[in-house]
Length: 341
Image (tube, rainbow, N blue to C red):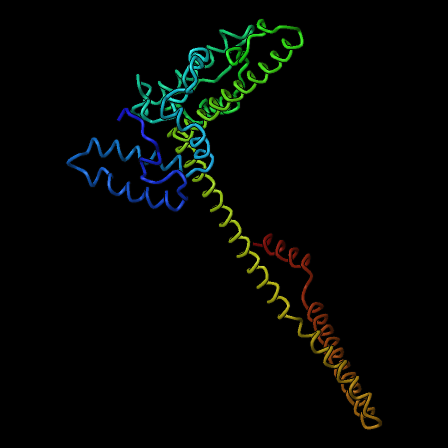
């Protein structure tokens, strides 16, 4: 389908259509021309379906739609619309804002990478021809199998920030030599300089927009974005697992701390219980005082009995140790026995 059609006409909507209108029209047109539903007319359906996708891609993007609206006539015409401008510019960029200018994503003649590599190479060559001392530094676009970060990323970054160094003298509206006096000549030169700046700005904008337009449709960018998203999801999953492990360890440590707090030394419990009991008895007058003294006496008696029992045990142990022969004596006895034998 070589003839270009207005994107609004492709979707069957007016130029003032809302985002909702465009979305609804796109779904309807895509359903009608989907290749799977047009097996008997597959070639035309495929071409129409791609055209519908291109129209929706442009009109659903506010920035692209605004630029398309401002340059619709030039894009449909495939030129700037101004006589002589394309000749002096050396290239007509508007005709490359359409998928009809390439066929397939290959490096072969007419393919996506061959077409746009040539376009940007021409722009660079025009700069080199007209600008004295210009050195071409634009990275190569690469091919279908070139990794995004190994050239294509730098290529699009360069052209999306492109700024021409050409003079744009063809934008002049008046000839300074036709001026009747010096003052009029200066006014003409000033006016022509503004025209040149406007022409340069428009050309830079065209080049940058084309770079963005091509980048958006480059399959390598989509593949790179997918890899980045998968890597980000993998890192997020690792972080979630790490946080879950930290929470588990914290719960385990908390359980251990709670168990240690529960397992308090029994002797300490008994001690504090006795202290509390003694304090309670101290506040109950003479009866409490008498009972407190009796408890203390019983405790002292228990301690004395325990001390006596420990002393008796030590005494018995000493007697037992004294009744046994010394280790050196046992060794000496064994040696004597061996000699007699």
